[in-house]
Length: 188
Image 1 (cartoon, rainbow, N blue to C red):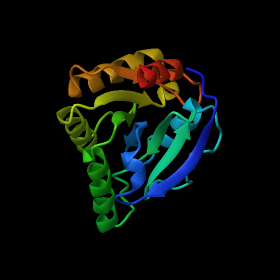
Image 2: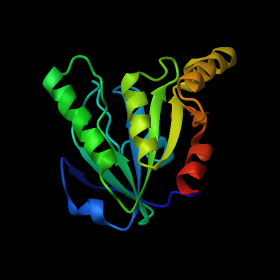
Image 3: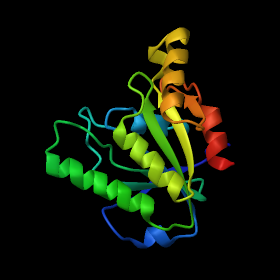
């Protein structure tokens, strides 16, 4: 798939008419600091459309980006950043779960993991929510360029053991590894 256009439309914190539009939504979710914004920019062939902060936990709303005037990339807040107050972390987790349980025209969910860390309890909970609601899930193991081939293979086996039956796509926003495969899954 070729990305011809991508633009920020709006950020929301709750119910909004954008949720009722007849456009597919591709939601990106993951822990703070997994490289979610960098991955989205890589997929969109942009440098800084999706903002990433120097400190994790910057995104505090659900941001919608219109791609090719056909579908949305949806940037969900990162979760689990320990330096945020507990109340803020809980609010962000509730916002993510609320969004994933909203009925929309069509949604695919991209769970972004750090290949070194693998999935944590929240990642597995997100996977459960997505699978139970019948939404398509794409799991990407980002930052694969940080590991040699042998270590990558070991980590992918560990991730697969914790997420049985799920295809894990190794990727790197830096080297663009996995970009085409992820785009094919998104548009299939």
